[in-house]
Image 1: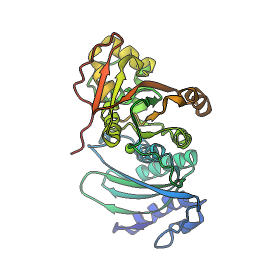
Image 2 (image 1 turned 90 degrees about the horizontal axis):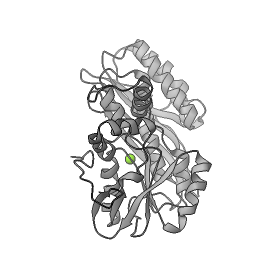
Image 3 (image 1 turned 180 degrees about the vertical axis):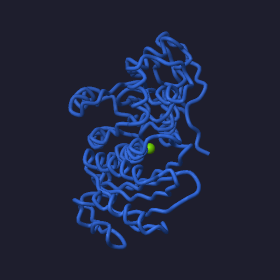
Image 4 (image 1 turned 30 degrees about the horizontal axis):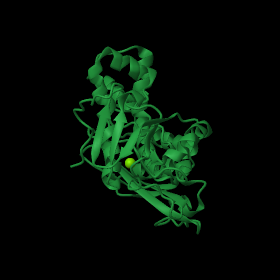
Length: 330
Ligand SMILES: [Mg+2]
């Protein structure tokens, strides 16, 4: 890992902390060469993604170093899952500011190490620089998918079933709690919901298995409806979502029961990093098997129809007003 920092001891420290993250993958040469070397198996294609995060924009200024590290690696892993890819390697660029002292760096590297072990990936290179601005990080993840099988957003067709993994809205509610934007709830609910914001669970194994079943797939980062709309736009279809079918955690259920307006955070809140995907109706029976196989709850929340846009309906058939579908990219 090269370093643009001027300080020799900081360079040594970064080298000492990050070199172990490359152990286990020979082609990273313990980060001692100018670049890493690796190959893909002949039956696979390389899948590449990058996420950048800026303090104060993508995470809270005073978030702990381990939460920042894990969110960075996990959001990229989630993009691999969305493509049906098996993650392999990553590159890391960090612009450090004065907040990032030795202890911060140690905690950051330890968290990366823990998640690397969990998800079977290795650091293979990167760069470190100093900044007077906000802490800024960027991670490039590389993975493999069987040739021609990558999950895309453009394959949904009318009649397909719209599905999601896990529970929806927890992260947005967790963030609202962490920032004091909604009244407090029980300690257990607060801990559950905020951990869903700080520590997303990338659905890597599910993504790998969906390669043979899903017609379209993505991970929910912008907001449930905004992301479903991404599938609709790319596939030139529309979607109808049944609000009662959207899976909510017990904690989220308690919150929306107390304040119905919080449904808007379920519809439009991002950061859940669950997968939203479409399957042909003939695959419906396989969902339960897939859920058991992966240990991830899977729910059918609506259908794909001809047209454009996303509408939400309640049990009685009336349309539910949606204030914001989610984050709009500028
Ligand atoms: Mg994504």
